[in-house]
Length: 325
Image (cartoon, rainbow, N blue to C red; front, side, top):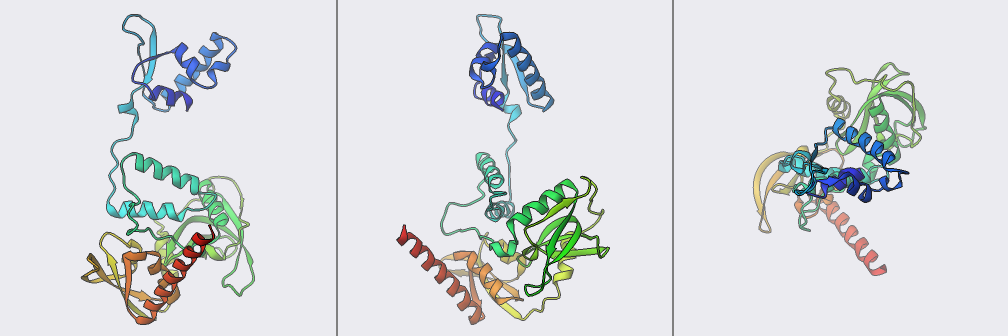
């Protein structure tokens, strides 16, 4: 990586001697011959990785060979995201705010911004929803499950079917993790039951253990994980509907939950009226409140008051924190 950074930082060809002086690690070589062996090895590795390493004359007045990386060939092409894709990236960055995954999220966001992609508008009038931590489930469990899925290994963990039920050990061949109605679910083959099962992450204990050989677990072809979860969670009774206004190009989570029923302008902002089914008034209030000024409940008044109470409590908490600091 040090060699790549060095060769990208200049437009001219650098001699091997200049590279030896500039790149950390090369200056520790015992002799020029030792450096030459290291340098040849690294050049071959860069070429094997597809990095466009070029050679050319280091000086117009001499014949000494130099090296550089062709920036135009190395850099990614222009990245173009739709507004929906940009919103998904922004929500993902806020979602992975955990010790296990925050570095990855920040790195991805930095690369997109470096490419000129606006994934998180700077305006305070367009906040991105922070997905509530308790709907994600345990962050350590999530990280371990994703690692097991990536490695193709089975897992064992403690799970309870309800908050007032005891934990029971499950052995599962995990296929993937998906969201439905604001909650995260693991989908896979339950080894003990010999059947396809879903497990809500918020009810899985942190102590997830991988077992078995790597690469042994594969999602069956044609399996739609989201469809499996939707069928399992569809049994939740709809207790009513809510009319929610959302600003244009905002609040995509609510747009996915509801059906467009009209257009309306509020406080000078154009937006869409949604009819949203209510399964859990508490959960829907959290989702709407999380979108800040980009979403407003019009009906029913009970839900509107719950959202207002949550926003007021958040504002009071911020005020208290700022006063203490």
